Image (cartoon, rainbow, N blue to C red):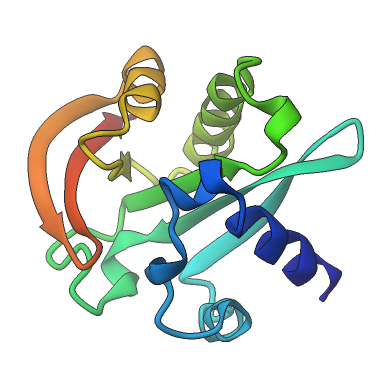
Length: 154
């Protein structure tokens, strides 16, 4: 429960709101977490030396629904993350988060593809994903608006 206070603080910061946005959730964040506790979404606090600095989630694309990822196979997971602590920005942590996520997710033999859907205007995350081996699949329309679908195959 203490993580909710931290997440709400991070989500109110301008650098997180710019890409995550409060409008992303039509329901209170706590309800989102409990609603997705069925295993369709796995959520983590990113820590460095035991200090929380950001948020990461992955989800089984075929199980999300509500206009998201219809038709994706059960071997596909999507990822989202942000660095919440402003003093941790611009230090290469995002690249490390993506590298750690790739290692963790591809340990599961059931996962064959990882997708991400940054805003087409989010050049920083697009660069990080490309650097990590993700390839652009083109712009798509999501419930949150236009996005660039990027994928990484095993």
